[in-house]
Image (tube, rainbow, N blue to C red; front, side, top):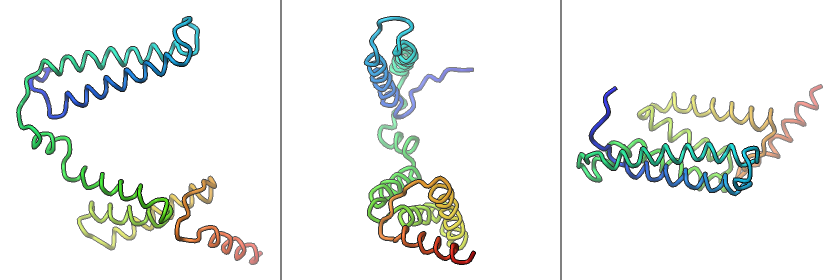
Amino acid sequence: MQAHTNRRPGEIAFNAALFGFSLFMFWQAYQISGFSALSSAGAFPMAMSAIMLIASAVVLFRSLRLTSPGGGWSGFRSEVLPPAVMVFSLFILAYSITLKSLGFLLASFLFLLVSIWYLERGRIGRTLLLTVASITGVYVIFRVVFQVVLPEGIIPERAILAALGDFFAGSK
């Protein structure tokens, strides 16, 4: 395996973030019980986070020694943040903002509809079919089977479920 000699766009920033995260995890592991004994509750988390910290430091220092290929922001944007990643980041942001007000069903339907439409390059029939099938499957599994409470929003979900329950209870 040949080691690369040029630094990739965003490599130092990513490795520095990884090192910072490892340092944070080491501190959190230390907060469990300090380093009082090898059998203490924090000993294993401290050992694992210390390995992460050392490995991330080695990777960070190695990447600092590599030569920069240039490219600047355009190289970073094209390799790390291509248009599809940016578009989906905006879709996810919009979904997270609208989830509480619109509710799970409507926000998820709109998110999947727009996302699948974007990926399918505008084929609306297949997009609608996949969206409805996905939302139905997720809803049945999580809301009906596992009884997970999902954000209700503007669709009166509880009233609809109660009406369906009454309908099926009356048909016996």
